[in-house]
Image 1 (spheres, helix red, strand yellow):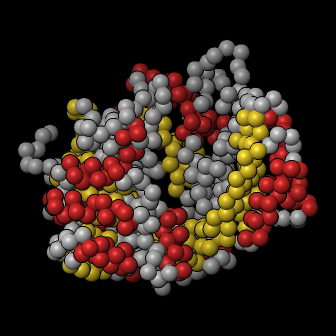
Image 2: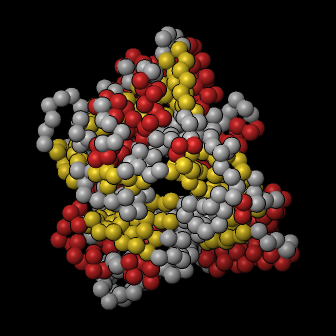
Image 3: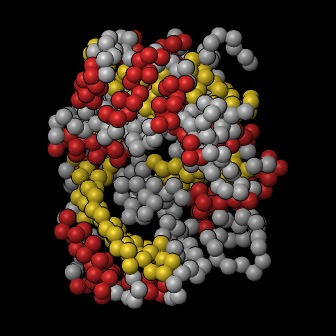
Length: 448
Length: 114
């Protein structure tokens, strides 16, 4: 059971593109970490990053990169903690160059930044390619492609670790691979040792969403209480050479690590627990043991693994125009009836007066919004909000929707107030597969 | 769901906790009992058929249930259940993050419908 060799300590300092920064600073200053992973990329964020890069070739990386690096680099460099991140998004080279300039400005002489490229496969994938998990092919969508990124695995990251980089920045690095790569390097796990790769992938999977394993996204007052949620800490994994690990957090941080928080994350976004596909391994989480081994300490072991897929998943982003949302609120007696009338008025105006055919949805927040399609309906409430959403290739359609909803202030039912409306670019993503032999990741290192 | 009932009855939230995740247009919700003694009840009440029948307009595809016997949990994989998925749905919660509470709101009465 127990291993006396020192554990390898990996922390997570971001679990999504807009995750918190101050608890990451606490972790890097007090966590005695070997590695800090900043996981900042999703299917949507990579597609939006491509749009940013099209607008400005020096952009296209995570919007918080500058502030994150500014806050984390000095302490990480001093502690000998390697930072591994996919904040490069659609432009890892620009992200690495920016980080290098920042390191120089901070006086971190000798700091080495490595940049991993090669995930952009837009020159390799044909629009006749069949979709991964639904019928049809890419060309069916007839929308402009904004980017195509293959998920890179640990084999793309290890050369940067071997090069001695202090900061490793990639684009579409697969989330668990950013944790597995340093484990393979530290413990000398063979790329064909599938049970160990499965174990390292389990560590990555539990850690990749940050606080979702330390009490974030868990609290339900009265039945699942989490102490000091406002100061929730990011997780630390103490990993042994056999791949078993203890998930914990800084003692002074808020949140909690319990078998329950770990189990919820164990199958988060997992379908068949015995076959979790990554670029590195087909991981088996179906027999994982989860045991409390102390306050805020949970040990996980017994993950398995089989051969990795011969293909890599590719996220393809399309420019789908614009998404608009707008709302007006009604409160007090008859609020529901007035809200419902407002919904009828807006729908009729957009469909019949303006002849609009774009995708439209009208909800009454407080009555039935999130669960409307599932058929739910709340009891009588006196505080409802009309919520209108519309997507169209034509921005004018979306602008017109906002105008119609705002017009309810004078032309709709009595007592409506609080109009807000926003228009955001809309990206649609689809997945295809590519033979992994066709994807050639590269590493380039820079020294401050 | 707060459909008024004549007498209070137990719901899944009384004995279990859950988390929802999304991949494309497929939603998965994992459900875990607090007390292992309740796991047999959970397995009897929360079948794949029950979930599919409870939300026919929402879940357009098949529902698969995986049982994690030793950890006392169930994982439901619901295909074509996200109104197109995070980038296509016009639902405020386009990820279907709130679906965990859709399932936690189901009745534990063994003869109950949705």
